[in-house]
Length: 501
Length: 99
Image (tube, rainbow over all chains, first blue to last red; front, side, top):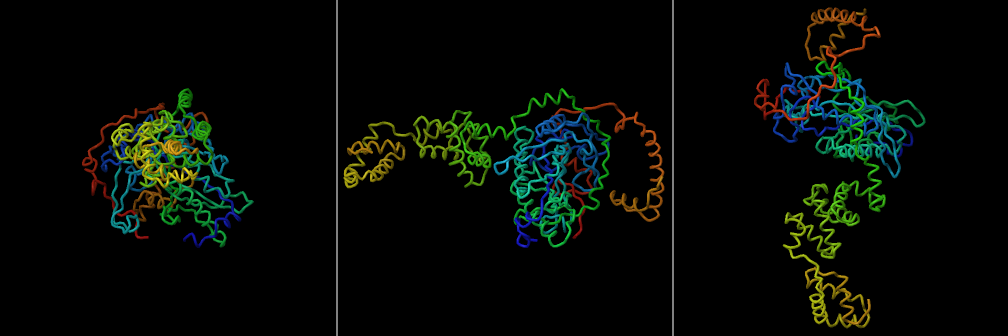
């Protein structure tokens, strides 16, 4: 079903009220796995980070990673959750080769954190997303399907399993049903995942890079006729892996549900896959008896019972909530809502903060990151943070401009040099000979030459056509290879020709 | 005590990927029945509020390990017991059919 066959988004919202539930999995950035000491390095050769425990071999026993528990509690606290006095792990049984044990160790009826909320920013207002629970579990292995036309599981002849990822700690964060978002539901979904990602990063528990699968979102959606309270049947769109996709997937599902319901049909409760290329979803693999996981308490692990004093100690380590921090920075920087949102969306906030800490003025730091550097990042198709320039180097460039040693044009050349790997700003200035010519004698001589070489233009200026001075400024800038302060050059020209600017 | 049905045994067998013959279904239904009866007797006692539910015989909590890397198996050792391997990965039979 393509988007064209669906009722419009506006029409869908005219008849129905969307209800969402979002499940986000975060891979923790611990050095080792959840239940064994295997390393978690990304991109290691296949099956080089596995041991008897994460391979589910007989006689091996899991032992809980202390840092993973600490991270789970800190995430729970940052989400305003209550922390369980005592909780257990549970076995989730299923037969699928991505887990060699034939079960995943998770938490079932006793999550470590529950009953919280996260306030997110939409369209200038605040929307509170309530959190049902956050629990600890382990990631699965990675399958490669061989023999099918497109690497898909359907039609594959066999599959290959790399268990390096099996056992990496995961925190699953589940919202309560999100009601009342109305037409803003897709935006709320996106804003929630974005805010959560920033919170996770601020806590330092994971880099939460969605493109690497370190953070993944499942979006549940149902519609009910406007004015009614009973939830409709939901669909669950799995593994939506970018902020934009979260928004598009929810929007598509709203339109799809409305179309089916509008034709008198019924929604099938099923998992669905999202397709980045055209923004649609299709039915997923029908898991037979998907709900029949036969959970039972994990007999190989004892309960986790975080002492209250320990929980309070961890509460003391929480960072300033990202949303409050953004508001504070916006005030300190004197930025508008729009400028702040742009910086936020471009991933520039931390870079600007670091640049200011390195001595740049906030407006200069913002200007370089959101101007020249954003342009370069865009051209190269990389994130700002991936550019080969550090906040300290940007701060140095900004300082040189503030001192008058560089003008903007020269500063751009310095940045270009740094990005090209020519060294620190001062090295580039030195090597490329980039300094504003502030020697009045040298500048005066260049101005005199320009006047002498362009007598016609000089006459026009003497006759009062001050605008013509631009041509002479250009000549001087060319003669000084752009290293003069253009405003000062203009002043000197007008002075020499006896005209007041 | 209602007995476990053949249908339930069929369902469990399917979840466990076990292929059972008809006569085995009856046989296991009978055995599972006996097991459930035995467990139910424990349940009668545990129903007493004085006995908290327990998942572990040892009165321990918070057994953790520091987040320090320990040596893993060499890939060839990890794969040594695998029925089949390819590209340093465990090779498993077709998971899903065509449809």
